[in-house]
Image (tube, rainbow, N blue to C red; front, side, top):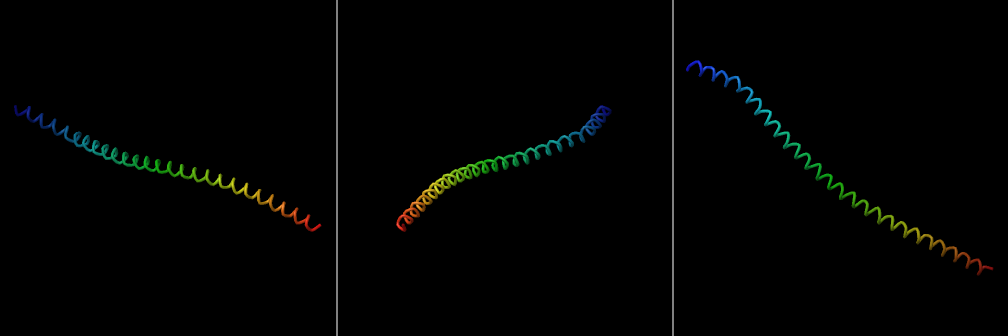
Length: 94
């Protein structure tokens, strides 16, 4: 009986460091998982914000292009008007 108890105690002592190691590895793994989940949430949030910003920039670029086309048309019209005035001035001068 005493021999069996001694063997059981020695077996428990041999297993104890493994149990401590397994517990520590599990704690570290859980901590790593929590940190990575937090990082991934941050990256996903930043990605969503970046997409929204890109959409706004695209809309602004399209509006700028539309306005540039309008300015170009107005410039051409103004140039034609200047040429008409110049031609009329020449006629009046002759």
